[in-house]
Length: 128
Image (cartoon, rainbow, N blue to C red; front, side, top):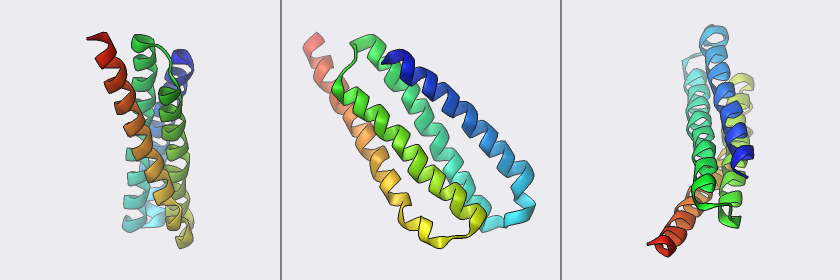
């Protein structure tokens, strides 16, 4: 589990840098300031949650794998796809309905972080 999520986190972090650079250099003049702001929000959340996957991998290495950690990682990954992905497509295409699915990704982020916190809290108490 540790290796899988750390590798995915590293790849997704790299992709967030590449996607951000693409937006800054290729899209800025083409899609307008409001759309760039939406795009940049997608990049920011993409990066933060890819780092979250690295943290989950490190946590699994310290505490061992668990069902909660697996679900936390899955939800952060799903959140990146739905939240950031919908913002990328929305900003480039202008299809406003995509904004309706963005909150689903946000909920995935929230639940993923909550599961990480619960797992660390519960297993940390057992070690004290």
